[in-house]
Image 1 (cartoon, rainbow, N blue to C red):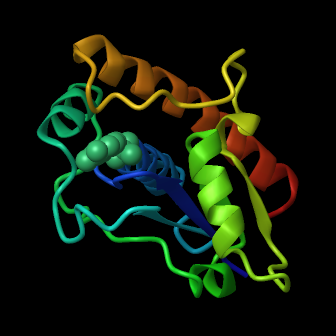
Image 2 (tube, rainbow, N blue to C red):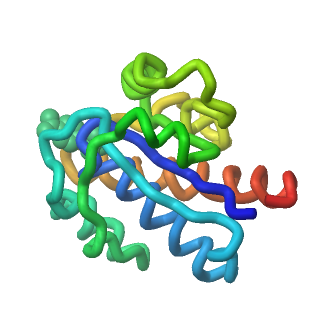
Image 3 (cartoon, helix red, strand yellow):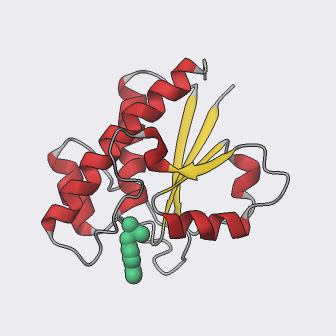
Length: 157
Ligand code: 4NP
């Protein structure tokens, strides 16, 4: 059985594609493609069809993650039928997803950083920030992806 994980931020061009690319690489490197599948989406549809932000791509590439094939899409109600785990980058994203979430959703909807070891509970939006903001996103994402993987493997995903 495959565990389907969806990462969600606001625009789906900075934080969630970064989490998507980082977690996908971990899964590829560990040969876990038949057990875990990954996708990402935004609560807003403004950037639908676009590649990740050039800054997110550049900083991710420096750490060995290729985000170039990813394209933005908006989170939709049927995502709750397809995904087992829907992970929001910040509390507003979580609130917006809760509003979309059908009562029959059997999976887990949570903040992504619930799986991380940082004292932060949200991945700060880097869109209007400088380079440090994008490095910080990668630091937080790498840490929480490792925690998420440990969690899924401990559950015999
Ligand atoms: P993201 O960042 O939610 O991490 O993809 C943003 C991207 C675009 C905008 C805001 C945040 N925007 O206002 O267009």
